[in-house]
Image (cartoon, rainbow, N blue to C red; front, side, top):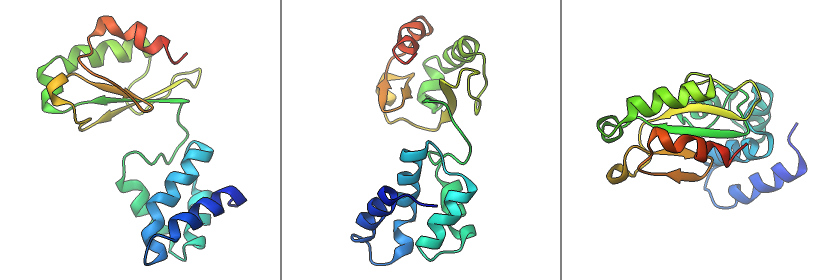
Length: 154
């Protein structure tokens, strides 16, 4: 069931679009901001509210890599795996990060703190390799910087 706050925020999005379906991605982002991820139940609730088939909304949700369809950690780490980052040290950075966290891509640490995800581009190729934690972008990242960076989020 959608909360009153979620409905109010979705209605604000609906005011700016010509048809309800056009607010689908923003409605999913609202749910995710409030709940941390988009469960099957909440997807069905949003679809019903927008008068869409759940399958149609799910195709939108699964197309965007930043809509989480399963529980994630408190902090999302996006590790850029673009060609620029590969050339500038991605493999070593990736290996060290996975080792420090004790998880692979798509997994969450046992304490629920971090979820690690690959990302095709963070838009900072001139400062590769790069990673983003939540909304914080880190550029020119070396493996030696990881302890300090991760320590900010524990």
